[in-house]
Length: 109
Length: 115
Image (cartoon, rainbow over all chains, first blue to last red; front, side):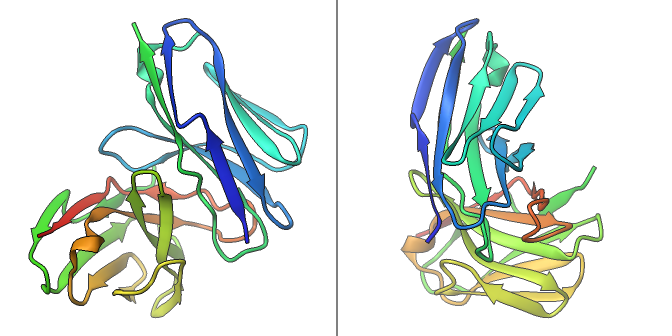
C-alpha cells in the first residue's frame, strides 16, 4: 500500500526566513511525484512534477527536489503570499494518486 | 486554462436527504475525480471516471455513487446523507492517468454540512 507522510504539519516563518517542507513516501514503482499548493477555501493548484531521483524544479521562491524516499520543497526568502497548504502526491503503480495531509505554511510579515 | 466548476460553494443538508454535487470541466478531459478533504486526513479519492459512463471506486466509495452521462460533467450523489459525510468535496479533471503526467485541475470545492 502506498504511503506518504508530510512534515511538519504546520510551519510558521518570518518573511525572508528560508525553510524546507518534507514529503516522505513509500510507493511501488514511482512514476512521478506531484506538489500542489492550496489556498484557504480553494482547490489545490498544481506546482511541480518530479520524475526521478536527483531531479529539481524551480518556480519563483520554490524549489522541489526528489530522492528515492522523499521530496523536499525548499522555500527561499518567503513572502506572506506564500502562505498556503502544500500537498505532495507520489504516483506509483496503484490506480490512483496518494495525497499527503499537507504542510500548512504561514509567513508572517 | 482549464476550468473546473463545482455548482455549489456551500451546502447544508439534513440527515437522510439525497444530495447531488455537480462538476463541469471545459477542457475535454477524459478523466474526472471526486475527492473529499478532511483535516488531518488529506485528500481521499471517492470515485473516478476515465470515460463517459465509466467509473471506478476509489478508496472510500461507501455511501456515494456517481454519474457521468456527458464527458464534461461528473456528478457525485450521496444517496442518504449522514453526518459523517460532512466534508469539503473537491472535483478534479486530468488529461492523463497513471503515466506520471496526470496533472490534476481542481474545482474550488463544495463545503457540505449534514445536520
